Image 1 (cartoon, rainbow, N blue to C red):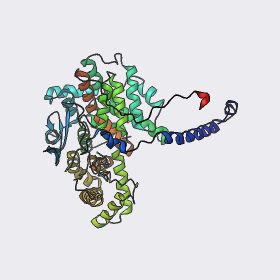
Image 2 (cartoon, rainbow, N blue to C red; image 1 turned 60 degrees about the vertical axis):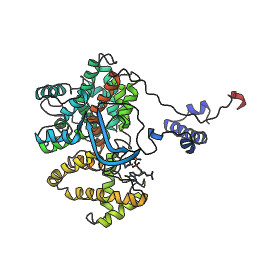
Image 3 (cartoon, protein in one colour; image 1 turned 90 degrees about the vertical axis):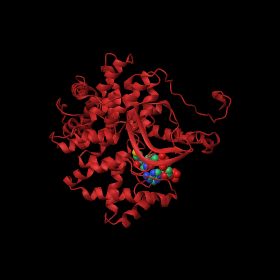
Image 4 (cartoon, helix red, strand yellow; image 1 turned 60 degrees about the horizontal axis):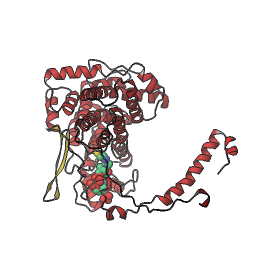
Amino acid sequence: MLRVDEILNLSREEMISSSKKFVASLCTQYKKNNYIDPSFYQKLDVKRGLRNPDGTGVMAGVTLIGDVQGYIIRDGEKVPKEGDLIYRGISIKDLINGFVSENRFGYEETVYLLLFGELPTASVLEDFKQLLCEWSALPPGFTEDMIIKAPSNNVMNKLARSILALYSYDDEPEPTNLETELFQALRMIARCPIIVAHAYAVKRHYFDNESLYLHRPRQDMSIAENFLYSIRRDNLFTEDEAKLLDLCLVLHAEHGGGNNSAFACRVLSSTGTDMYSALSAAVGSLKGPKHGGANQKVNDMISDIQSNVSNWKDEGEVKDYLVKIVRREAYDRAGLIYGMGHAVYTLSDPRAVILKEFSRKLAEEKGMVDELDLIETIEKLAPGVLMEEKRSDKPICANVDLYSGFVYKMLGIPEELFTPLFAMSRMAGWCAHRIEEFYNSENRIIRPAYKTVSELKPYVPLNDR
Ligand code: COA
């Protein structure tokens, strides 16, 4: 280690390099004292990842908001079934059929349903949409002070920081009563798309050397329309594009209380902390590649398959490549076929089924049918490959991410916005869970246990070490 007078004479680069060397030596020290023998988990009956031995989640609470159904338990056994996603008692398929058959946008209606527990009447829906439009404006100077001044290369990072920053623009930021909570939630849902659009514009400007353009949200547009309007330089989009994006927003709005980001939001809310803290934590959780970040991975994997399989229509060739992926001989060597498998869904993920059904029309318009056919081939072949390679009889289905990235790509939405789009849609579900945790006074602070497996040792005085 260097002496203090030596450190003071170093340049900034030398100082960083010297600090890194010191930290590298601490890594060895860390590894020596931080290995946990995996056998402890079994010996101590630890529910790793809060999962039961059959993969089902440990029951951590009750909710009225959303339900994810992928199996039934019969005589203590998990029996696979076609998946369903239920928002406030209504199946996602029925909800979507409802507004699609009337050729309407559905996300605003879904937000109302998730928060207030029932479908709005036509006049309430009109007032609600108007309110969301009015509240989408950011506080004066917010974009300049909070988004432009400290740009981030990552839109999710900027979103989390912007949510926390909004605390200081609120006259009553601490949780007081239900009215304040609902007011904060609705304003957050309305503002999130414009924060994402501005954070992306600023990222492109400062990190990709592109021109900076910031569009103000329009008062006469749905959230999906406003988002496409905001991110496109020329503001132009078609009705079909906006309706498909709206569908994606509805499909990603909620996924039960046990998914990692909703649970993170509930963990923080259970302490009585403010809405801004709880929602920024949820964004941090969703950013992870095992959660919301998976949609980018799917896109990347499909490009890899396209470059390495010469004939996408040859099922034998596609299958051989999928086998290589699972054997860690191809793509990112992680052994995963991204977009396949789910912790709850077994025979089907209803979101993937719906997105696939709606993708074809736009794929034909955009000349991207070959890519959609390839994705469908992967969906068809991957379960067999996984069963053979893993010697497992567990059913595996396509998950929402197999199709969502493709849909965003068709909409010309850049990959770095895939996860932020997920976040702006899921804001509705997070707010609903946050308020449910806040409003139900029966809820206790969430506090599971960790068994300490280190041994007691005496404190050794500094000079004796
Ligand atoms: N590719 C390769 N192997 C997979 C797989 C996939 N897509 N999905 C599941 N498996 C494997 C698991 O690795 C595990 O194998 P192991 O026992 O050798 O460790 C086994 O199948 C059992 O998995 P299962 O219990 O069904 O799933 P899970 O709850 O542990 O994991 C996911 C669920 C989503 C994390 C997992 O399916 C996955 O990693 N999928 C790919 C990533 C993805 O698409 N994520 C988006 C989810 S919406």
